[in-house]
Figure (cartoon, rainbow, N blue to C red):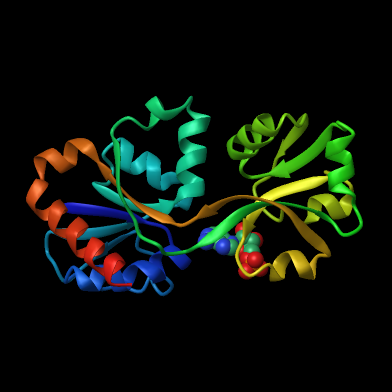
Length: 221
Ligand code: AMP
């Protein structure tokens, strides 16, 4: 059995065409079922639905053989657990070029971010991406107090909880609707295929087949 860990929503939807190219069709619609294990038209391939932030954990510890997750999630997973070594057992063979966005710093309209940074002010930054934010501001030599949030980051500068946020930006519409402006582009984000290294050795042929099918779709884009 090959187990693929996916999260519902954008990643699941954008993964369906890749699976199709590998001859795999998921038999249930995750929005219409409460099942967490979804069968496919291939009796030896199943999909498990997990939270996006749990995908690296499932794959690393062998709860799934493969998984698809954003670079943001992978970086937070690795850095939270103490650096590259903590991603041991996770092989990252492919940038799937799906769920593309960027991770940026944003502030309230009218907040003079450049001046605050120039003056060496201590910034309060609210984010779900504490590890990425810590690394980014440390490299810039900017002192920050980080506040961990789990959602609705846009509210933080509007309520006075923080001076800035670090969040994913796609079209920029969410920032605009909340009177926030992007002041730094930290990095581009896309979803990555991750594979459990031990599974790759033990089930090399079927896993390779899936990786190769995904790779050919990505290359043809
Ligand atoms: P947008 O308004 O298009 O800039 O989208 C921003 C909102 O969507 C933010 O709340 C982000 O957290 C979320 N978002 C944007 N792109 C992604 C992505 N690729 N994966 C997950 N969340 C995203």
